Image (tube, rainbow, N blue to C red):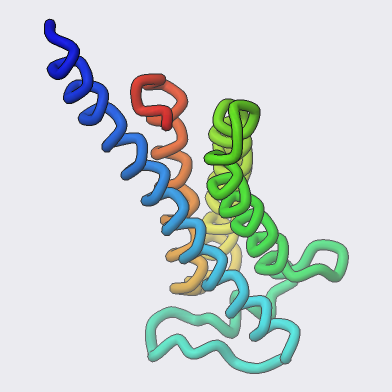
Length: 158
């Protein structure tokens, strides 16, 4: 294999890594926006705009929407912000390149498990679904899937 062919192969291997990291960061950005909106709705004691889809009020007013007086959405916003920061720091040296994907995986794993619990609460206990919560649950689950791919396939690591 020539040097030029090896360089071309290396460029093709980098492309999936960049795409996966950007997709994960974009999903974290979406989750952050949704979480910040739900935090504002909770703290401002106002109604969420659901457009006739789901029952945002029942979910947002339930006892399950806070932990120790802190809105769940605010905790979610913190997790999404941390994931965005980890994605940003990944390009800042070997330490971050190695450990940022692990941090994103840990946050996404916990977030996915907690989202599954909250989805169960919505369906089985509250009998109401918040579309924003569904968007957040999908976003965090996709981040988890992407982080598993990134950790499992070292050739996609950027």
